[in-house]
Image (tube, rainbow, N blue to C red):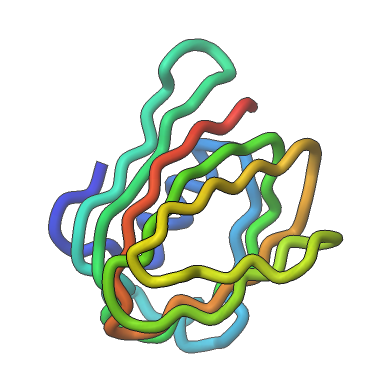
Amino acid sequence: MCNGVVRYSDLLDAANTLSTRLQPLDDLVSTTDTPTMQGRMLVLEVRPYLYAMGHIGRYVQDTALVNEVEDIITCSVLLAGDAQPMQIEPYPPFRFVLNQTQLLCVSGKATCRAVCKAGSENTWVGFHIK
């Protein structure tokens, strides 16, 4: 669990816990351990093979990531700022709408590409089956 400053290394630790692969889409994030988000993040094993995850925070720098995901369900809300569409192959772009709750389900393996814009604030919770 992170409370306060969430660094890129914290995101990697969460991805490792979930046995997923996380990579930056730019060199800035991969070569520095500067904060990416101010807020809270949690990954918790509920029972064997079932993980709860979530965060609430404001991005302090543009953060472009690619993540290999598998069997997830999430609920998210963009609370402030702007967000670029998230691409989950092979699905159409997933667009975030300010103050609108959105549910996302991925069955099987998929590659997710997202750019989290500095100043945007969001919250999400979800479950991952590992």
